[in-house]
Length: 287
Image (cartoon, rainbow, N blue to C red; front, side, top):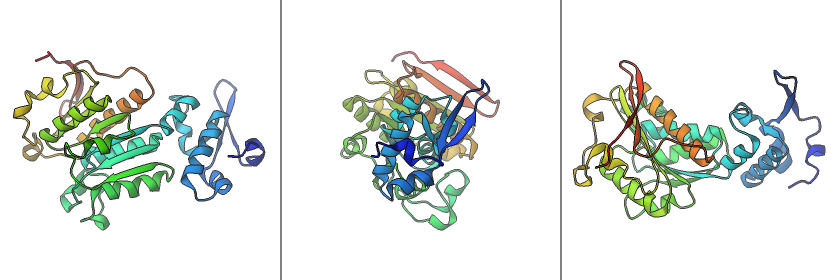
């Protein structure tokens, strides 16, 4: 990477005035690309080098204030596994890509169908019949081609979950059946990473973070042998706005975990009821 970064960026930097009279600088993605060419790896390294000098890539400029430059670098160097790329998963994938997480492993064995169009952000008329995980990669690369995307175009099972979670610091549960959720929590426990659960049905949803060593899903849904249900979604339906709220909570919690900020775990769960509307934090008894 160039040692004379400031010289190379001369005339390409944009100044941004802050309310306190200070300013910071940003640089456009296209200008960075001109310096390193088409290599996604080199482009990400250049982004990191800019941030080390408090120069913000323009695509992350609105993160400034919420995140420091060092925290943005940490996100760029982090990995997250998203299991399920439908209603919740498509929104989680988009949120994590836009916030700047550098590696996303996406798993889904299903293909888009027309009934997905009401709520699954990655689905379009022109990609019906295509695998959801590959469509997620296409969507991620259209936002930021420096993000490394691991595509797993099959259902998550105990046999492949460890490969899916490899290199990741958080697992995000966007599945549609309880049995697979229990498998994912068990695999996350085995590899020692937090598990961010989300579920929706009708106008209600749950979001819970489970750290290694915590009971997690059993507290919320009962003993594992009862975990074959797909939950309330087939009966209640899923409008577009319910997964939007739950996915936003999952993305924010994932970012906080990656940055080492305090998250919501320890047997606590967010319950969302948009018919009221309300978001309440519940404390679950251990079973």
